[in-house]
Length: 157
Image (cartoon, rainbow, N blue to C red; front, side):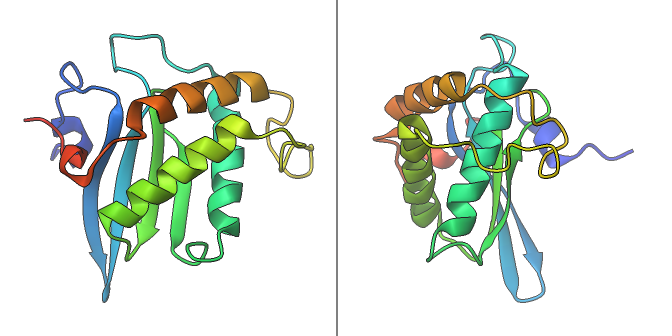
């Protein structure tokens, strides 16, 4: 079986940050996957499920309500390893995505309203959320990447 691209990244060397993970061509469009790596794989505690679940709800809601980018957002959600999130988007340049991701992290860190999609009919695990933990994780990660540049968005080889 062929090894998929994400398994070719050395997760021992991978540091928290924002990365272009891959670009896929679908017809005339380019779907870019951004790796929002919030904790060091195999070196720091992973985010707890309730925190990353809340980040997912808020991030997806903010992205899909952004007037400029809602129609280009394909997916925003957690990695199975709970070290970060993936953001998949249509036809967006890395600088645009970088600015947008930073904005979303800042919004999550400052959020104080009711959690979107937090009822049994809307969510398959609505009781497992942690708004304060999500805000802390997003704020700490925002502090790390607020001066991040497109040049830093490449994985180290």
